[in-house]
Length: 285
Image 1: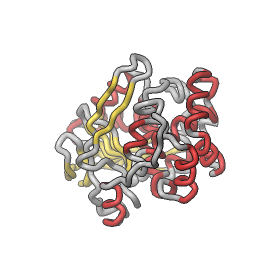
Image 2: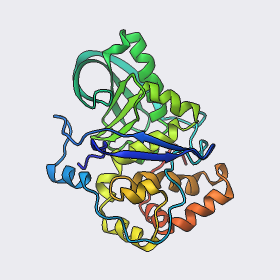
Image 3: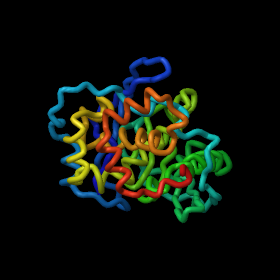
């Protein structure tokens, strides 16, 4: 699997559409391999060195897409989350951005079941002290992950939850959550949009980021939806674009007409590419 958990030198830039302030989120991650995750050193090396972006003359309209509109998916949308059950504490290898490294923790483990057939192990850092407090976190994010389109849960096997104000991450068959950062995302109304971005890394990048159809769409469009995608065309273009595809294809009533037009005129061929995949995006449909 191509790991899109961020490299150790990756800088992630986003622009808030509400205040149009530039956010620079330092995304520190890794392309190392967990014992229960499949990857290849060749693929990890390729992600460390994104190729030169498609030669374009147009300027992307946005810095990053998660801040464009907080209403694409909200906490009032349906979720396929059914239940989470505590199964005990065991040692798990998890990535923690606060130390920029892999850590072994005697994590609280929760088997989390979704009505669309997925079962995900949520691993909660023991710093939450008790299984009761850990279960609050597991249930909160289980509910939010249940709002993800079906296609974005297909490769998610585990979720790591830590404290701290550090950006989320995706890849390694996992979604990484830092609860202090979650509070910031929630203040901006973009927790759900951020999870869509990260789950796109986990479930879409391996199959689509280097596919001939996607690369052809990039060339035909002659532009990127964001400077973040332009500067990281393999690592970020799928995740940056899939969110806005959902917005125009399924939630056009939630975004402004001008935003819809900008998206459709900037990346029309990528939108067609996603439509042609016939993804199952329930419960968003």
